[in-house]
Length: 173
Length: 225
Image 1 (cartoon, each protein chain N blue to C red):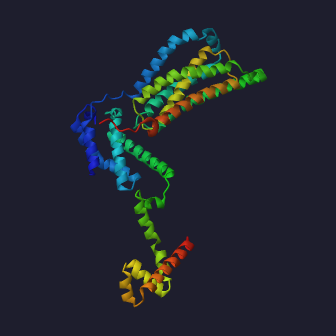
Image 2 (cartoon, rainbow over the protein chains, first blue to last red; image 1 turned 180 degrees about the horizontal axis):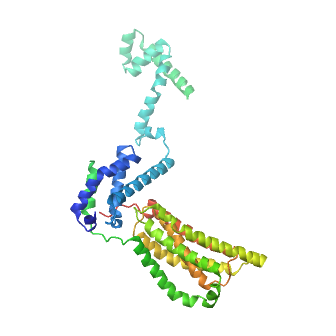
């Protein structure tokens, strides 16, 4: 460290590398998460660099370094406590996207179970017409052929189904 | 090793210019105290009232109070310099406590004696307000010089360092005040002294906390690489 104070860069780099396990051990006592511990270690390295003129070569280096590491670890804990006190965890914030179309898609997915049960509650004829014409997107002629019903009957069933769904979903809101 | 730590070490090493080591804290404290004594030696002959001072010296309680203020000032300044370094014991903060107790006991006793002797007139008001101004007036330039010296150590926890420095400066200001202090301490006078000392300590302590807050003072800024 004394050589580093005198400007020996190679000695300084070697010293900082040699200190890492020691610093990680101290930071690890206060911070369990590996990424947070590494942040603290980097903070200690920056602090060491900033106050390296305060080290007295006549005194033990490890004591000086351990005090720096402990203080910065505690400061990081305090900082974390402050941040957590201010920040609010909002579950919805994770489900809100910058793109409005994406939000629509997400909310459509959320509403799907309700829609599914609403469709299930429709009379058989209406449900069948809706599934074939709107969900499977068959043409009226194809649907008529498949069900043996007339085109106009299918049209009426789809119209009634949509009306019933609308009334049911609106009533739920 | 995470690559960002690796990069950081390389950058720090590349920017490691030679640094001037700080002198031992006792030596630095001695320099500052000698500076203050030198300024005091110039100012006091013009400002002090030596006739009055010599008369008051006959009173042993006054001498005790005088020694108390001086020792509190010196001890607190030494403690501030010690605490400004990362590896010094926090127990240094106790160093000025015995002389502080002596100072408070002596001035408290003087007040009490005054009150017994003078009765209600012990509760005087008037010149004691000037003491408040004197303590503040001495403290501001001394405090600024001391904080400048202490800041060289870039203390990790500036608040206790500044608080200790404030106590030292207030003690020395109270010591200088005794050279031109026409009244003996009354309760009100002691109140003014306590308010002035408290204000100086609180002011420097607040300054220390302000320095400690990275958002306000930029104390946490990484070094220029």
